[in-house]
Amino acid sequence: MRILSGIQPSGRLHIGNYFGAMQPAIRLQDEGDAYYFIADYHSLTSVQDGKALRGFVRDVAIDFMACGLDPNKCVLFRQSDVPEHCELSWILSTVTPMGLLERCHSYKDKIANGISPSHGLFAYPVLMAADILIYDSDVVPVGRDQKQHVEVTRDIAIKMNETFGAGLLKLPNPRISETTAVVPGLDGRKMSKSYDNTIPLFEEPGPLKKKIMGIQTDSTPVEAPKPVEGSNILALYKLVASQADYDTMVADHLNGGVGYGDFKKRLLQAMTEHFAPFRARRDEIVADKDYVEKVLAEGAEKARSVARKTLGRVRAAVGLGA
Ligand code: TYM
Picture 1 (cartoon, rainbow, N blue to C red):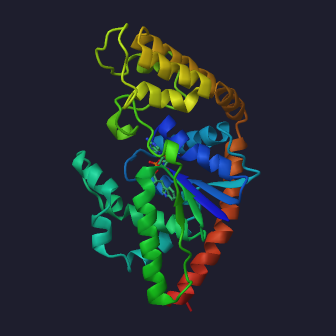
Picture 2 (picture 1 turned 90 degrees about the vertical axis):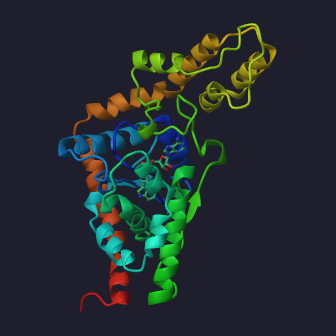
Picture 3 (picture 1 turned 45 degrees about the horizontal axis):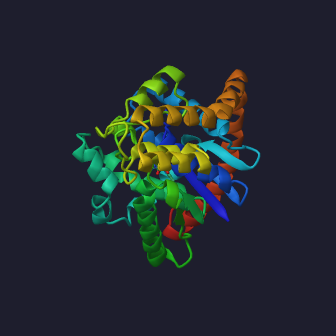
């Protein structure tokens, strides 16, 4: 089984990225042939500062490994070290109907949020299709917000196969973990940098406390029972607390007598404890100055040899080259 996923280096990773995609990807590294990459070509659609982008790429690599990604079990690489993605993207774009891209929610949301539409932003799902198809991927672990992009990938692969030959490209399947498909942010909407509602994965203790204690709640008095349905604190607590502690917090909501401030303190503590081992591992990785580049260089070589083969097959089928 070939597994593939990517993360954009467009700022600090947040716990939505972790629970929605990184943790499932890390679990899958023991189950097949996994390729994970840092999508720096994609991030050019939002980060237009070379120095900052290079720093974000390094940070994503460090954070991913700190959370448990093991470069001895999977291939970790930087997308731009495998420029074959871009060539395949161009070829795919020539069979991709405009309407397919016009229907993409992520593009429509960004435009609605005031981002000025570039061609790169519009064509983004075609590059993502190339990322996936170039590795003959079977499974793509992602959060729910990327489901449509994997469906678009399948549509493009079907179109390529109809046009240039059955079996040319393999059809991938999204793998979405039901319990963590959409991690809520501090305001209850999907956690996302564009909503400014994130809990960064490696947030410092002071700002983390401020963020968690600042979660919006209703004005139910301390002694009264509190709603469980739609509770943001409970949804976040479920991700980091033990089942027993979670059940206690649910009971305390239903029985009343405990205030939101208390629930937030428990959430803060569980969150801090949950990520403490990752923090320690992160310090170790950062201390070894050349380690990250070494991992990425080795990953690039492995990824590139697979990508070259697929691209060669596609070039031959479509009539490029001698
Ligand atoms: P990106 O960088 O926005 O997010 C990385 C991963 O995190 C997931 N995610 C979430 N999951 C649950 N709840 C949330 N609040 C949440 N926020 C983010 C995303 O679903 C994603 O899985 N287009 C992709 C990057 C990409 C890619 C690929 C992924 C490029 N090429 C090929 C898979 C395969 C993106 O922007 O993810």
